[in-house]
Length: 381
Image 1 (cartoon, rainbow, N blue to C red):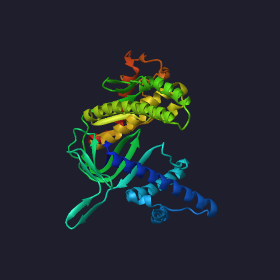
Image 2: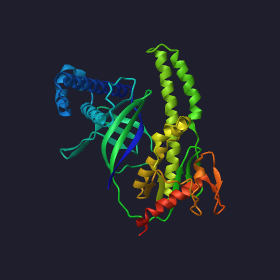
Image 3: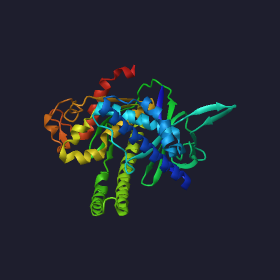
Image 4: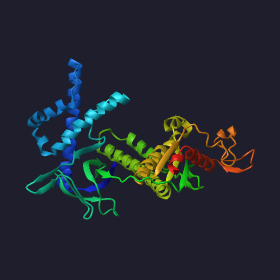
């Protein structure tokens, strides 16, 4: 089975390479906006949709009109047209119309991997050297990278590389296609997981992973910076200095969340063979105004996503029970249902039948585990 993995590195280009990256970002943005304008114009005038093939055919003419387009990686221009085509496909599905790009929004471009054999020499336009921590990219040549200190070699085939710029820092994401050997593992250790806001993850073994609520740490700082920004003249140097500080703070908030989630999910997947959790409707949960901020901060859907793909990579099993299964209301000892426990303020309750004292979250995790086991008996045969 083939899987796709992305490895993201911090990039350290010299001044000449920085200029070329910035120029490439500008050129790809120009192509995207030009082609979007042409598509809109043609459709309004003649009700004809311009295809990606038509756009690619126009590239040589644009290069003649604007010679500076020839100074950058030609593959980056082609992939920009494919990105525009993908944006329109998403529009038909989600009703979000493609927007024109500006230099202050997301800045990135993608180049595809090419391998040729010429005069018994193998040519590759993208090379990743994990030993010397360098990467070779089209037009840019060798650059230093940082990341994945313990990884000495990445096995697989490079598909493409995405170069991005965020707050005067440069990054490269390399997409690999890797062969995964499928193994039919009979689970020997099973865990049920309940996700929450007070505690982020609660397991059927009684383990609780604390929700550090990073939003409370950074919220005041972000508010102060936004007040500061409102007093600046829009478009001035000081305006963009403060705006970059806000971006930097949001980045720190995001990195703190992701680091914690990766740490938790890695531990759970490594220690268990069958991971069972419930399907969550996070969009509905976020609609509740009193909890929306903390549910968004908890990143529950990201926890589920990571558990799912990490289980797949490790040949482990991942299963989700039905959303409406009343895991919190059922006593895990005698299976008695108590509908009064719908009240979230009741964190501990005593079963009216067996008199067992239940911790709300641990009890829910145990019930999730049993429900998942009942639905996956085939895994043990």
